[in-house]
Length: 71
Image 1 (cartoon, rainbow, N blue to C red):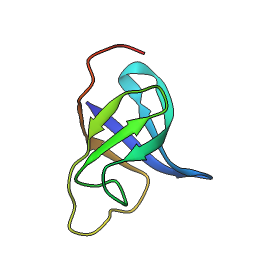
Image 2 (image 1 turned 120 degrees about the horizontal axis):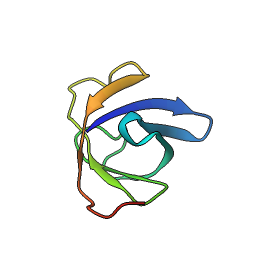
Image 3 (image 1 turned 120 degrees about the vertical axis):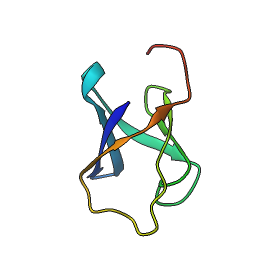
């Protein structure tokens, strides 16, 4: 699923265009988010791609949703 990640006032923000959903990233497996899972404010969890160096934000990535329930 395509997810746009940007920097917000309180951390990362994720936007899922397919669902017209914008949520803050409230928890991350790894500092800086990349290469681990990221949990959104609505409870969805995404496996984020890994980068050798953190990409410039905003960026649209292909992330796999690990949760199967709808918000």
